[in-house]
Amino acid sequence: MFFLTPLIATTIALSDVQIQDVVPETTIAVVSTSDVGKVITHLQDSGVCDTIFEIASSIKEQIGSESCSVGSTECTEILGQLGIDKETWTPPTGDAGFALYPVVDYEVGSVGIGFLGMIELDDPMYDAMFSTKFEEFAGNAGLEYETVSLSGRDVWVIEYALPAAAPMPNLNIDPNAFSRIYLVFSDGYLFLGSEPDAIASAFSAIDGEPENGTLASNADYLSLLDTCGTDGDIFAAVLLTNLADTIMQIDSSGMAMMFLPTLKTAIGDIDGIAESVTISPSSDVFIEATYTALMNDGRTGLMGLIGANTTSEPIPSFVAPDALSYSQGQIDLSKFTSLIKETLMSNPMLGIQMAGHMDQMEAGFNLFFNPLGSTYHTFSTGQLPLTDDSIGYLFAIECKDEEAFGNTLGSTLPMMGATPTDFLGNQLFTIDFSSAMPMPLPYPLEMSLAVSGGYAFIGSTNAVENALRSTANPKENKVSFSSNAALSMLSNEDVSSWGYSDLKKSIELQTAVSDAMTKQMFDEVEAFDPEMAAEMRPEFFKNSELQTKISDAFASLLGPMAWNMTADDTGLTAHVVMLKPESD
Image (tube, rainbow, N blue to C red):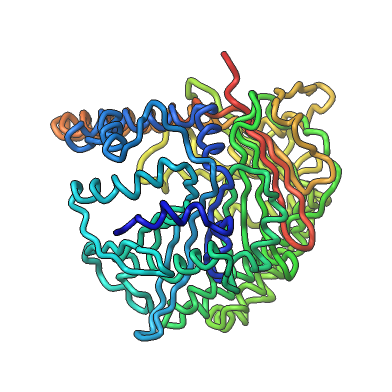
């Protein structure tokens, strides 16, 4: 009988099994935790669970209870049918993981994507549930299945018809890869997968005979794990080399062989990316995380433009004291022109078309980039209520030859539609993008460029003008910057870049902009067709109200955030700290 073996096998399990010990070394993506209960507890302590329930309640209220019938009462009934008391239940404390990996069907010559999820359930309660209650629950739910034997264990095979979909041309992929689900509880583990090989591999590991060639032996995975550390609540990784190999196998048209080298040249040869996240590690911290990008063959492409680690500079006076976000760092623009040439030439079609224009293109880029340095500063601002100057952003980069850069702006930007004006003795070039928008925005959509005080500026017109005022009167512009509590928890020395932000205020500002755009749109529709506006308004504002509730719920979790990033020959590593919301 299905699930009969757990009662005996759990007591004789030989090995502690994790997701990386089971799935193949060709795995594309993996998410894992060493303690599910710890993750759940931290989510509860941080308020994430309450926020999710609040969002779910808002969605249920919006779409109606008939369309969304699963609530607290229904969950209690389901748990009761499985023999679990909701009031006394405690989360499992074992390992859990989920992975995606390629599956080759040699008989039909196709490649599919397989998945495997697993969770350790070592409480005897789950033995009783799966051996006596689950089959009854499945029967009441009308679930149809058959049983197969894998490594002496009974495994459920659940087949279902996937919705008909249009065939995907030039993709050598099995469209029915997920039409069969394998489900089994054995040896204290619950496994859910799309094909039997990974589950059989898990049984071998449990029996003390682990297979070779699993993810645990993948050098890129081990490097990512080593960089991110094993102390976080959740670890997640994407093995980009494996992903690229899978795409090449799936694509029967050969197009992947054309665009993947170009993409690799442009962005950089990234072998994998990963993150390790700790939720609510202390009473005042919401999230502490480490992110990394692994580049075994050295940093190339856009990733190679990121400058080396250096000592932090003071925040310049032209940065707004109440900036919502700010960052500074190093970027090596001397490599940019050669990167563009390499990217174009890596694609045979583009290389042939652009071969005769390379010298002219290189000369044009050099006019802009040769006068510039490597240190940059960027920030954004925003205030409520919305006015013409409520929103601003600025990117400033060191300029070593202001005269040469100014001459380049003067000779090129007017031909691109920019309007030159004099501002405090500096030339200000402004481009208005409002006419290109399908509908008007509640704030000016102008971008300006200028050079002054050893920096080249590009950003919203109001921010660039304020920067020019600051550089014109440096002695009179003594600025006291707003403090960010998260900054004190991270070093900004010997880093490639660092910064801070206030995501809560940014979300509030975006919501206000969206509301203003909606009002402006309906004012125009009403002036054109009052009846159509009256018909559209109730449903539109109902959906808008739901989006606002969801945004507010997420914003309630967010506090001050700071980050830094270091660079070396093997890639990039970033550290992020977000505090819990400050009490009003």
